[in-house]
Image 1 (tube, rainbow, N blue to C red):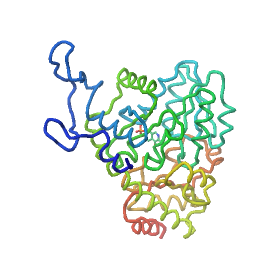
Image 2: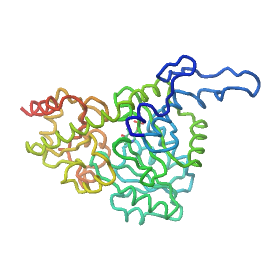
Image 3: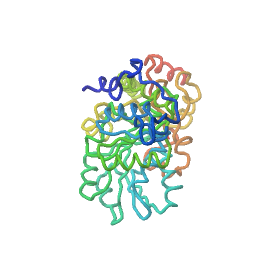
Image 4: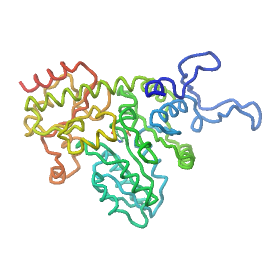
Amino acid sequence: MGFSTDAIHAGQQPDPVTGAVITPIYQTSTYAQEELGKHKGYEYGRTHNLTRASMEANIAALEKGKYGIAFASGLAATHALLSLVKAGDHVICSNNVYGGTYRLFEQIMKDYGLEFSWVNTSELSNIEKAIKPNTKMVYLETPTNPMLNLTDLQGASDICKKNNLLCICDNTFMSPYFQNPLTLGCDVVLHSSTKYLNGHSDVIGGILLTSDEKIHERLRYIQNATGGVPSPFDCWLVMRSTKTLAVRMERHEKNAIALAKYLSESGIGKKIYYPGLSSHPQHELAKKQMRGFGGMISVDVGDTEKAKKILKNVKIFTLGESLGGVESLISHPASMTHATVPKEEREKFGLTDGLIRFSVGIEDIEDLIADIENALK
Ligand SMILES: *Cc1c(COP(=O)(O)O)cnc(C)c1O
């Protein structure tokens, strides 16, 4: 099936009792059992919920995976994922991952005997160099936030296969509409469904996708045993949202391309980071492993004062963290998401005080451009 057909139909069938076309919100903690040992396959809400199962199947289809395992947040999904390794094991990570992922690994999981190496995975040889006898997992995020660096997923997963390592990809930035890491050899894909999957800035959620039966069984066990499951209502909201993922992503991208063009032609952007521009150092890789370039742009406007002026005066763009919603957001990574990274370190990879990150929404592009023009007046 095509992406949009799956988005609208996969995992869902009319309710057998009433014929309701939309999967109901099964807001229940437990299920009536007919007699000892005889029930309909549903025993307890943490373990089984049909709204959740429908959403999991829906997103699994979009990621070209067999199984989805949902969690109450992206970080709860990441945390559960780390239960696939154990004390004494070593994990290699992209050095520019989501800040909360870094915090979870360094501030919490390290105390449980896990070892992490942070490497620039845009250079595949860095992954190979970091492998040790106790390495078990490679944790990738591509494109990265906010510099939008890419990692070659096929190349990275080949290295993982050769060395018997689990290959994980956080695909939150691209969404399954533009990139499917499982088809490029990754073992597990992670999403913060808070972002593009839900897309309306009203749910916190996470999900893991895999086609490997053994990994699925273990993750399903971990989901039930650790219990970080999403509510039925949140699952229903995400499923309502994935139906329009294709049209939203098309519009996010169309607006992002137009905004990137405007920022470069107007001279406002001294340096523009967007994988869709031929000036992006990995534009060729982007074209090869993604079907589009997404809605995230970072722009270095050259000086802090100009950045501040834009951030302060925009009216349609909302100053805030997060991304992937229908409304446009603007943020200042140096003082917001990446404030804990020392200035010298940040500037080494281009994260200056003049850098602004845009999560381009699906409003009218003329209004978005006028908003930035007016902010600078
Ligand atoms: C937001 C985000 C997460 C964490 O997800 P939450 O739903 O906020 O817990 C993980 N990875 C990326 C790339 C994100 O943007």
